[in-house]
Image 1: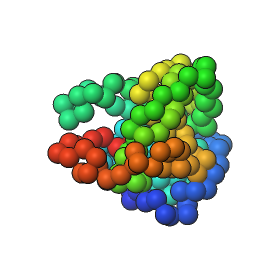
Image 2: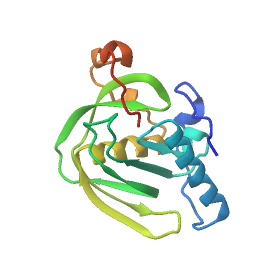
Image 3: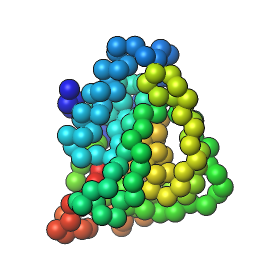
Image 4: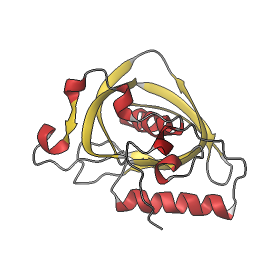
Length: 176
């Protein structure tokens, strides 16, 4: 089922989410299915449970090759519950980000270039990957939602934040 995505300004997006305590339940399967449907409907790269008003530590993300987004590297479709992120080094890079909760806008955000993420899928099976680049950026963006952080809160230079149609006229861009 496609769910409404909360927009920046909704106080629920600023709350810290609770850990998921039970895996493989009908409720968790339904939540993940709704998140997938909602993300696909909006052509997003990722979605966190708090964005649809569910304060649980669950995110999904994934990007496949798409002619609309020729520069986006492929990111495997992933369910990540109760994530733990560990930077692999101090190297950071700045990059443009968007968000389904901040529609129509983009900003340049610093993120760790390489990281390891661990957690569980919806069945409780472990997930453990070391990634870099766009994949690492997407994971950090989505996991920030679990701690009540929206990407504009991380922007260092507000001259690099604005509306898509002004910053990138004529381009269709992917939202995270």
